[in-house]
Image 1 (cartoon, rainbow, N blue to C red):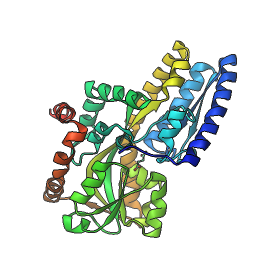
Image 2: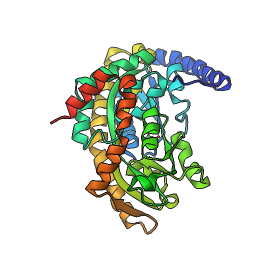
Image 3: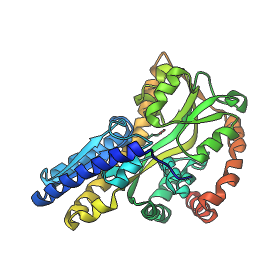
Length: 337
Ligand code: SIN
């Protein structure tokens, strides 16, 4: 399904675009470049840290001539409008969760949402850093985005007002998911009711009782301050959350090739740091939550995990066609030892 924007939003974005064009013309004269990088999570997350490292590296290496402005926490654009903003040139760079591309005409990215697909980050990297990852980045061109690289956050854990260890626990729970058909199907397969919401609205939805729970890597759970609203975290590790860094292709083409090289190398370093930090930050978040008097952490037994995995299997059959059977096979081959 293709995303639709409302006309008021498009007018606003068009005005921003006109302003952006005026700014870029004046920048072209002085050789200065402004790159606006918008994202929806907190600064002290793997994505936030990657973005600020990128900004610092670019400032150092260009002597301040290329300026990266980072807008975190959906300050500038949220899940509903950031891709449109990128296409219109109202921002130059984004790093949306891979789950968010399916709704924008790129269903193959929903392969990453398949429940219990990956057991560890090493398997994820064999996909994202290998030929399959390259092929996926190239496909972004179909939707007027240039893919520059992948970033991990990590594995998602379930949170609610009770432990979610068995299918009976999931029954009837209203659980917030990103706008991914695979994630919605996963929740239904487990017996829960999926509620699609932008990331920036999740806290409010939990506070007002619109949803009972959510799935997040612990770094997002902690930094979005979901802990007081969710007393129980079950370490299900049932799915992966990662990002693709994308840039507006017109902006990219407007740069001198030396500036493109500078940005590419700074981003490669920032992504390496972000990938290194992601596992670390999720572990630190777990330690912090374990110490919190307001949160109880639950583990799954091997049998409980196997039962959830089996219940989620129909999702694979349901989406093999839209993800693409051959892509799914390539991903499974890359994962296999
Ligand atoms: C993100 O990490 O960028 C947000 C993920 C979500 O929407 O759950």
